[in-house]
Amino acid sequence: MALIANARMYAITPSVRDAWQALFDRVAKTSGIPLIYLDHTAPAPLEDLWSRDDLGAAFMCGFPFASAARKPHLVAAPVPAAPRYGGLPRYCTDLVVCADAPFAQLRDTFGGRIGWTVEHSQSGYHAVRYHLLRYRDRPEPLFAEWIGPLITPRRVIEAVLSGRIDVGPLDSYAHDLLRLHEPETAARLRVVESTAMTPNPALVASSEVAGDTVGPLRQALLSAAADPALLPVLQSLAIKGFSAPNPADYAELLRQARQAGPDGAKPV
Image 1 (cartoon, rainbow, N blue to C red):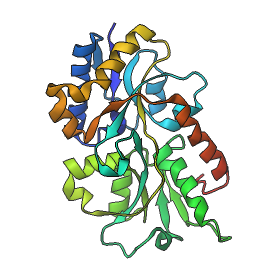
Image 2 (image 1 turned 90 degrees about the vertical axis):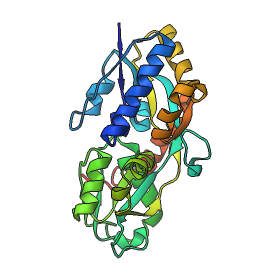
Image 3 (image 1 turned 135 degrees about the horizontal axis):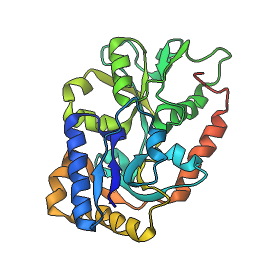
């Protein structure tokens, strides 16, 4: 039986989506495990994708992984190529404004409008709430409005550029892909601050999938950097390759969310 592959979280342009499909096609060939790419485009809820019992390699955000009572298999996590990541499978949230906006730093956006994606998102919601704890030195709310759910990085970008929000959370790896594949749009954005690094979203397989199926998929991804056929694909995806993530590392995301508190900078 063929399993499902999905990279919606990082299919930020059609060309990036095609690169992910090329990667999964090669992984299927190398591992001997058939994979079918399923788009599952927004606004279809990611929770519906993650609840399937036939996932073979689908991106899942770290916070819902850490929160899941029955966790899927962690298959592999991408290692972004940019120097800021230090060769590790991690990422952060870039807080972006319009390039020509008058804001020099994040504090300058206080009193304005900030965007958020969905409540289960680490980069688009919880990382921002935790980051803002350092600014809770004033009695009034930091922002007049929290605008959302914006759902995807693309809609965050659109909201910033249209003036709907003053500042928005952009997954730093999605930002890398935007810079590479759509530099004219990336040039219209400016980062005023970035959150701390945390473990990045990983490719997961459904818990129902047998370990002897997950193993070959994992090995094919971990060896991708040594596959000459995948070199241009990895370059197009702005990654060095993949590593095996530690499930325990994601527990830190729950601790940070609890520290931010239910009333912290909650948009609802």
